[in-house]
Length: 390
Image 1 (cartoon, rainbow, N blue to C red):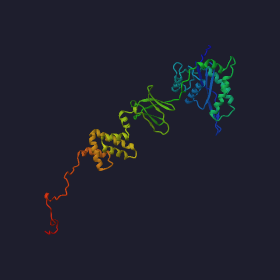
Image 2: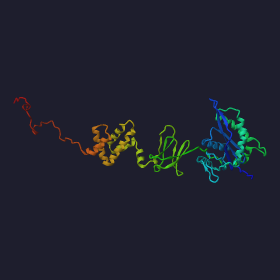
Image 3: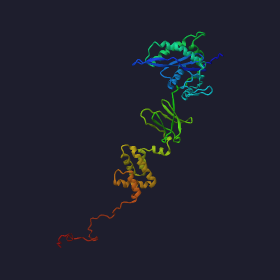
Image 4: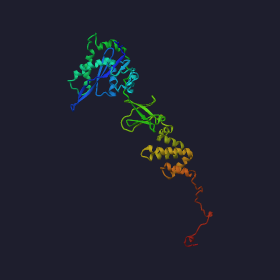
């Protein structure tokens, strides 16, 4: 049965069976290069690009570049049953690779894989592959290319000639049919090209972070010990639970062990701890009294790293909740009378023993230079072993 392909309906994609090659500049080693082919079913307009691998990254990049070349997107995408495109082969319900499906969603197209061992399901690309194998790959075989860029530039020049080659049994060429009939029917390209994403699974740890590439990203603490899906792009790390996004971070690079923590993901007690800094501790201490402020400054300055004193300051804050702010101020005053750099322990001891409640006794008797013999008796020299001249 003859089937007319509607303009803008389908693009068929595949890897060419024949490989091109590069030459290692240093060793002279021959490096195989894989050729990607995409052909529009209606106009037969074709895109070709060489890659060093057939992995997921190259497969997605090839599609993105092909759509840019066509200047639009077809409604249906017909790939072969490669693992980079189809995870589970089934005529009725094929399972599309997650990254591949996401790319198709980004461009607003539907992936309908060809049937296994049914080349007529993608006859356009199969025919293009055969022609390209002789028109482009074979024509470049006797030339030496040292970089992928050089090879793709040569392929592009050959591709222009291929798309401008007149048809044998009808008027026009691939390019003219594309411009006249198909280009205007393509779905417009999205504002930005698709950015390749990797997916992995992770378990949320007790510190409410997941780890990827030895860098840690936070999720809401309610998901501790749950399995989540992690989507990683060049710039963004997104975490999903049951297909719902629960966290998003700017991707970090460099030193292993870095943490990206969003405060709202933390339990309330962790948020309150994390929000404290030296200025806040000192402000709190001043609200109690000048002696407490001096003690807090002394605690913070007694450590090489300021953050090492935060726990002692928090403990001092809890003492105010237990004993009252008035007693803490008095205890700090008492401690400062002993040492200019009191510790949290010394303040705690003063409060536990009640020393802050003991007022220093002061002698209120006025000092006088008047003769005080009327208030007592005066001992003579004889009392001290001397002679009495009287």
